[in-house]
Image 1 (cartoon, rainbow, N blue to C red):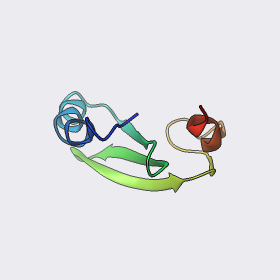
Image 2: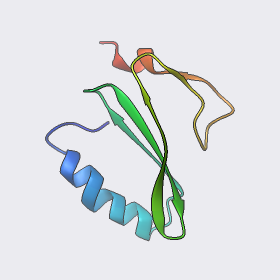
Image 3: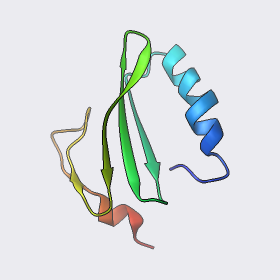
Image 4: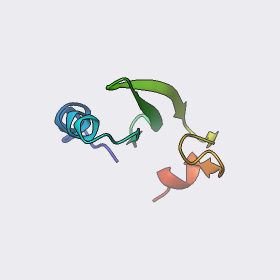
Length: 76
């Protein structure tokens, strides 16, 4: 989960490390504004596949065989 204090590191340094190491999928979960960004590594670059928000029910790579209710993540 991204927090405002780590967002620059998560979107910068960490994404570069994951790309260098060949991590094929990356999810960035942002509690405020309640979004899930789904990325796929393609030709050495991350491509944004989709952005989900609020109480969406999500099927997202590479776990698209299951549904994830985002509302559960924002509780508590």
